[in-house]
Image (cartoon, rainbow over all chains, first blue to last red):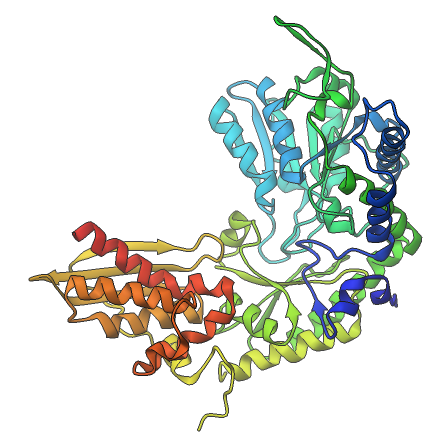
Length: 402
Length: 142
């Protein structure tokens, strides 16, 4: 088992903290915090244009992060890694550029388990353009997303499949690898939402012979700072699409009448980016790789399996997870207690979970629920955290006299 | 004395949650309230006669705090005139938000029991939802 709380100052500063909300955002290790803190003390300047040493050194770190991300994803073209404000903006960037090239009658497929970030932009685009938005449903019993539920929706009009790699509510892994292969053969573009996948699993697209058209994810869920999202895209598409935002840093030349745009990646990164957050990602990936993505996956899966087993032993507790889980996401309900009340009682015990719709209202509605309590385990959690969760869940039933 | 010392989920709150009062079918002005972040939903139906709340129905689908708050409200404002109700709602809102001292509702123990939400900023909106929904009805009536 990993023993990493010592690497994360938040635990030293909050004795007894049982943090089970990494699915929303992960805590930051000293390796990341100290480096960025030191960077601001010694090196900071705006990137690019500066002729002077500080600006160059900042630009070097900024570009090194881009290369690190490309290496992390197993792709060979760092200029196709675009830094955005967050995953939501990354999806919107594609919806408002590539999406606008689609025509009335075209079809987009999403799954019912999408986070609103990978659902609402496509729903809005569909309404704007008269596109048909088709929903691939999960199996209500197994909570898995069978490949055929996606492929059976494909027609000659299908232009895009926007698919979560991993559900933020259920932990269900979608058959994205198979979808990529099938879509490639049919000339359908695929956008993968990796917000819940990238922090927990090793994926090397290049080595596996996979060529997703777009991948988006959230560095803040993998120990980097907040304020940053990542979009990776195939060069030919990114070169073809118009800029999403225009203005500073993304131009080649500006006259009173016209503007020509900079080449990738600058064309898609208008304005001063969140420099510190970008650099934090370089150190966060370094840190995660030093622990080993495989080890992280195994560790959190072990904790989640133990939590699921123990939760199921408690009367009135229902766990919503597929049989085969490979990450730390555990959603549950307790008969007679609303998830917000569960989260409140757990908060009294310093156990931090999330309750509600988890930005996945279509999924919650499909499962005929109002809301879920969700505990998410990450690399710094341990068996003691499982113990605290179970004790506190039992106390919920005592408080409610059930 | 109850063995339950939880600062929020006191006996009276659980009682109103498990057996909410006055969720019934009546004729009157219907107003719906919704907390987008947590999914709490409430419908308040107010029957106003001669400037007075003759009857009201409060039906909640949500957490214990929201449900109990709505149930307690239904018992407290029945029979009040509109102006009195508006003032009372205003006072309760301030109380939940911590803008009035905790002793303010020493005389209304059910509302005092809800004072635990004052320490959980995110939960204040759960307690507020039925009251704001009623207020919206009355504003329309005015």
